[in-house]
Structure formats: C-alpha cells, structure tokens
Image (cartoon, rainbow, N blue to C red; front, side, top):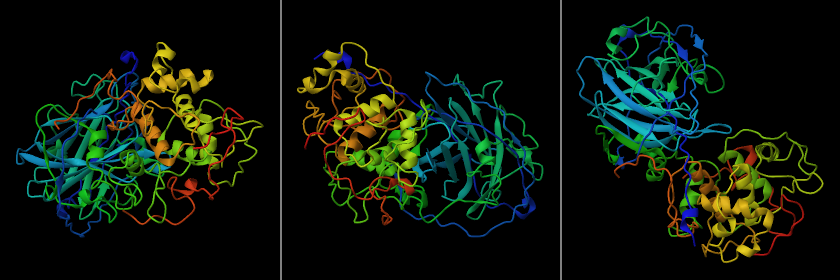
Length: 561
C-alpha cells in the first residue's frame, strides 16, 4: 500500500474571544459605562492539565450600576483568514505594578446552529503580569471565550468575555490597581493577522470595560464615570469615551451589553468552573511563548469541564467500548444525546431524518442550492428544518420522486457519501491505489469511489471491527455514525484527534500541517427527540428500525447487517 496517499488535512479554525472580568466595585465607583463595537478574535493554543476541587463561594451582594446609552460601531473588521490558522493570544496587564501574578480561568461558549452551547472549561492558567500565551485549534468565528480572573489567594477579581474572530487575534485584559476592591477589567482586542502581538492597522479595536458586583457582571457603555487612567497600558490604544464592542454583544438575542447584568456563576456550570483554582484540576503555569491546543483541552477536561446538564456517559457504553470517545465528545458538543433510560443504544440504526439533525448541529456552512419541498416531509415534521438546511448545504439529496424518505435507515455508504459531498472533499492521486487498503474495495460502486478515496486520504473512515473492511452495504449504527461524524469534524480542525485502531490509515497518515501543541450527568429530557439532539429538532417518532429502501441516489436496497 502506498502510504503517501494518506494524509490528514487539518484546517484550524481558531477564534479568539474576549474575556469579561467581574468583581465588586467600591461605592465611589458605583456608576460605570463603556461603549461597544463588533469584533472576532483568533488565537493559537495548546493544552495542559487539570486542577481544583473546592466549590467557589461567591458573595451575593449586588451593586446597581447606572448605565449610559450604548452606541455600536458596526464597522467590519474581519480579516480573511483563508489558508491561515486562526486563534488568539491572551495577555494580562496591571499598570500600577501592585500585582505580580494572576490566575485566568478560561472557558468557551461555542456557537451552534441554534445559539450558544453550554460553557465548557478550558483550564486554569497562572499568568505573570504582562505575560502572553497563545490558544489555537478547536475554535471558530463567533465562539465566545470567557475569562474569570482570580488572585493567588483564589479571590475572584474580574470577568471578561470576547468573541472569536476569523483571523488570528491579540487580546489584552487590563486590571485595576486594586483588583480585589475595584473589580473592573478593561478588554482590548483585535485582528493580528501577522501575529506580531499588536492589533493590525486599519482594523477595529474592540475596547470595553466589565464590572463585577457579587456574582453579577455588567458590560459598561462608557469609561467616563470612573478613573480610567489606571487602565492605560503602554502600547495599547488610549481609552475612548465610549465602548467598542463586537456587534453580537450589542444586538440580537445574545447581546450582553443591554442586559442589566450577566450571571458569573450558575448552578448548571461545569464542576471545574465552580471549584476553586487548584482544588479540582492542576493550575497550568504559563511560560513565555506558551501555546495551548483548545480542542485537546476540551477532551482532557471532558469529565469535569462540562455543564452538569449534559450526559456524556451511558449505561450501555462501557469504558472500553470501541466508539466511547467519539460518542462522548459528540454528546459534550450537544450534537447527539442519549435516551431517557440512560442508554445510548450504540447498535441501533440511524434514519435519514436523525442524521440530518446531527449534521445540522455539527456543521455551519454556506448553502449551495435552494430548498425543495419534499413530498414526504411536512412543515410540521420534527426534522423539517434540519432536513431542509442540510439539503441546501449539500449533504443529503432527494430520492426518487422528490421524496426524502426520512424514516429510512442509512447504509454506511450513505453516511460516507453524504459527508464527502457536504464537505466538498476531492481525492488526489490514484483512486485505486488509495482504495487498495480495503479488502472489499471492489464492492464500492464506480460513482462513489473517488468520494470514498477523498475521505480515506483525510483519515475520516472508521471501520469496526476490521479497519480494512469497508462494509458499504451494511446498515450504519449509532456508534458508527458517531465515529464517522466526529472524524469529519476532525478533518476540519475543529476537534482534537482521537486515537483509534479502527481509523483507516491512522498509523500511516502523514500529517501535512501540525499546530502548536501543549507540553503536555443530567437526567435526560423525556420527549421524543432523545437520542438524536437537543431541541425540538431531535425527535424521532420511533419508526427507525432497519429495513430496505433507497439511499439518496435513489433506489438502492440496503444490505442486512
């Protein structure tokens, strides 16, 4: 077998997000404000290890903050990042010199198809003031990064939040001279495409303040009502009279600035986000030029870093089950979920409607064709929107007679073809040579051979129990679809690689591009969408048993398992 045809193509969509810092403010600074403008942040990072087991105790004292009218500058500062890695670098400053070190607790709110997913823990990082670290991989534009700041006595001193941009971004958090008393944080960030540590000329600089009072944080409209000079740092732009925020912070359903306050802590936060630094997971010492891989950190902290409202362990998925990590990661990303009885049913088939719901949650991509009215999918059908959208994105086609066959079970070939077409993957080199890794390569129909070859080159094909047996006609199970879908996400660089002997060519793959790497359950809702995804579009009425039928090419009968 020619190993040179197997190569992982990793696209790193990294986004930087801004951090909001929360803490109670002295009565002399009872009123604050700052304005807003739209931005996206990117940064490169690598992961490290775990920390903390004590629950964070926060004061419930509240301070009313009088806010000024917010003006939003909607200039487009997005820099094209095509062909480039995206990510963000985060630096922490304190101008007076009263503070030497701080702990930055970093988490992410990923942007999904229906809003933001539940916050996930990315680690506690011990910074020296003026120190900078890079964070890369596993982010996409519009994700939000949250930063909670603590002093070395584990006192909560600030909060910030920022939005990931589509290009590499520099993020700066500036603390007050007395952060335990005056819990205000200045967030300054913008595009840094050349990664020289400064915001690129001609792009928007997002510059705003957050103020903490008890367990609440406010995003301020201006800096005119408090002593802003203590937040001025050499090399950063002068403080403006009004705040400049990302557009999504000031407009739309998920705006932060127009809210009276944002809660710093909530009961369903991940265990690691409620623990004191060092109590549950290890604090990571940031050194000069540190880099952290966010996708790997998400996996490292999966057990303690996810919302208590999510279930990632299932009674019928053992610790040594071949697809356990694929299933757990997709569950943590809210792409799929288990059933009310605590099971996952890994050997159950997957219908076309269920797969459409998964695809919609997994991928955000442009539409390449107009929607059509499928004769067998009414507007009231639970997966109507998912089916329409994934069709427009190019993943699934109509069957004969403008139908969709929503209850039809998928074959493994159906799943593979849908992923290759939706992601528009093409093979390079000899198709026959690439496919020679499969002992049953002759069973792949001619019209699909180049598509399967493209997936094989990208390390997307997972075959259990025999990595060299494709079994294209076999009905795809929930566990198999989980593995294939996860590998599709991995091929885009949005998730960490999972090591598995069932990934075709994993040992032979030559990785073309490497990123910086680090040194290193809730009760299910009882409605009919359990097992597919969250929300109203994860529902299957129960007619999903395997049976013959047509695939999205129209008419081929599925083989029996």
